[in-house]
Image 1 (spheres, rainbow, N blue to C red):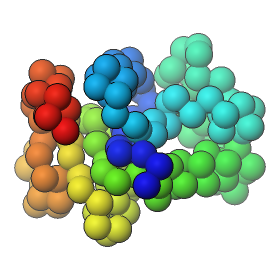
Image 2 (cartoon, rainbow, N blue to C red):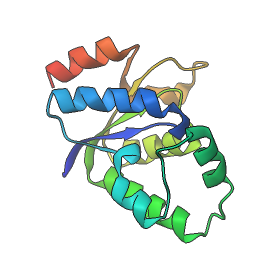
Image 3 (cartoon, rainbow, N blue to C red):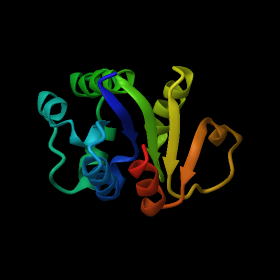
Image 4 (spheres, rainbow, N blue to C red):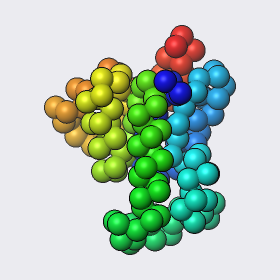
Amino acid sequence: MKYEFFIAGRTRNRDNILKLCELFDKYNISYYCFLKNDESHQEAGLDLSGDINKFQDSFESLDLNSDQVRIIFENDLNGLNESKNLLLVLPAGKSAHIESGIAYGQGKTCYAIGEYDATDSLYRIFKSIFKDEKELEEFLKNY
């Protein structure tokens, strides 16, 4: 495996996700994060540096079969396939939940962090749901 973790989440949750990436950097744990894959965004002609809500609205209006969507899909799926574990950052959108299901189906260990809106039996796929950054950091210290 190329990465220890695949970090999945909602693009609109960018600041929180990038903050968690810093924890992985601090403990020198490899990860794939869709927000840090500048190469695929450049290849797709996308820029995440501005207003994240405008970016996401624009991305969501693209045709599903567009080259931009295909490039992001392929790169993110490759990152998931090359990862040992998954961390879902809540709140998360449909894509991140689908990625979690793919990871679970591939036999990867799945974790989540954050609060969920309501109990869902399928959240049982997560070995642990960390309530906050502090709990995740304790886990990563001993990883």
